[in-house]
Length: 84
Image 1 (tube, one colour):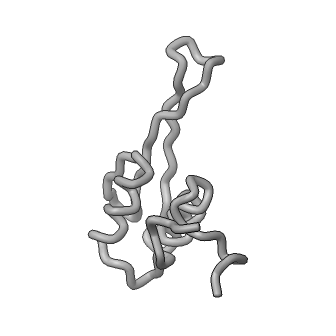
Image 2 (spheres, rainbow, N blue to C red):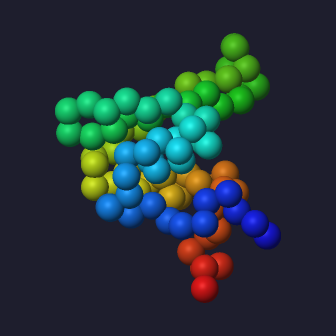
């Protein structure tokens, strides 16, 4: 199976690479004092509007790990146990 993201994000990943991952997930991102804010809409039929807005704040050093898990969950990055 081919995955759009071949490599995991690391502490050394550029902001452009992080932005590419955020766009692929369909998330919004802003950079604030001390970290990154992410937001995204998710379909939820229990909500009056049929969707719910989620937010996540991550310290700079935690962004790669969190985005990698989001990419894995979305099927955009191979899970760690499948890597060579």
